[in-house]
Image (cartoon, rainbow, N blue to C red; front, side, top):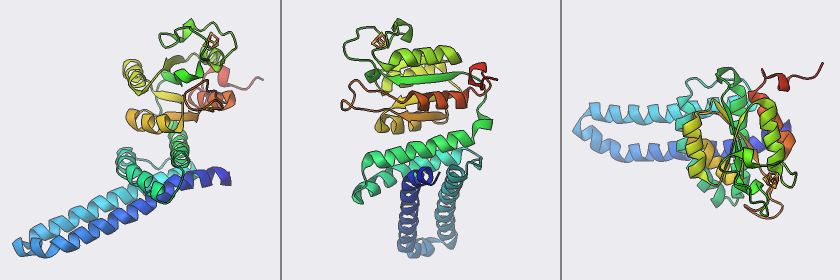
Length: 260
Ligand code: SF4
């Protein structure tokens, strides 16, 4: 449990540092323009102060709720727009800061995915409907297989040479739509056409981080793939992690119930 909290703390920590830098810069900017604004009209000066303080408070409140929800598992995220504003405003700064601090980029992305998964889990009660999509990267397919699985995963004959067959079986077991995609553009178009209520996405840290932000507010449960042969080539994935993610979305499905 402590290890999971520590993993999430990397992203949250950099977000909080970014936040305080952002507040500091906003304060300095206001301090510099304040005499000029006051000389034009006191009302304009007060409005600028109110806007700066209000925006900083909005971001701070959003970040506090995100941190508390991610670490406790209690859903405090209402309205959910706060999450969007906060993540979009702070993630790029947190990423730059972590690079300057010498933190491995994938470590920050992993932390972001864990925070996102914790938020998705906490918001379980709000995920309506059962249109769940499993998005898989094309690199899971072994290079010597020429079955056209990006057209439909039904073209996989489940020969057992790569994880796609087991994932296709898993999809059938839980009655889920599975799409294999070879990039962000195809992934986005699959999401737009299927309009899922939730997504289980398997990908590398980078693609997951971009994808989660891209499809927001659709809840995504991300599973990072394993790359024993290097990036984007004959990758694999821990099936237990994928099944856990599927069970999370399909708790009401008969296949997700423990056998009695
Ligand atoms: S399981 Fe077999 S048929 Fe399916 S994608 Fe992998 S290698 Fe191809």
